Amino acid sequence: MFQSLVSRLRPLFDRVLVLKAEKITTTKGGIMLPEKAVGKVLEGTVVAVGPGPRNKQGEFITPALKVGDKVLLPEYGGTKVELEEKEYHLFRETDLLAKLE
Image (cartoon, rainbow, N blue to C red; front, top):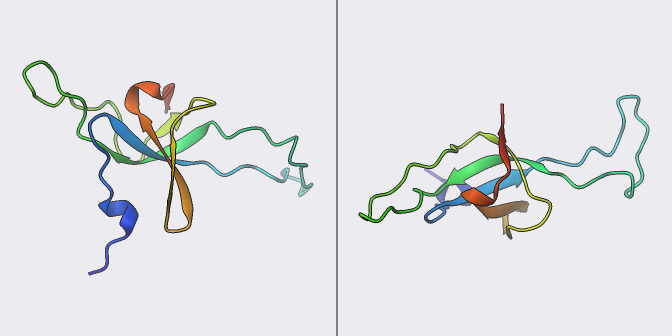
């Protein structure tokens, strides 16, 4: 069976792969917003999570995030990764600002 490239991608250590939320370009009434009025997207969804960092004994520390969690992203940082014509960002778990509930 065919498996997508994203589902086969496994981040290492404390890395987290995030799909940023799409920019809102129209209002509820249907008015198109100019590009300058649309701010940066600082929210995303966790797509893949690494096994976590290791402690001094060499054991993995369980990550606080899991696939499907909504997170608040920093304004700058992360590594852009393009997979299957979508743009993902790879962050360290400690670089993410918050988990949205």
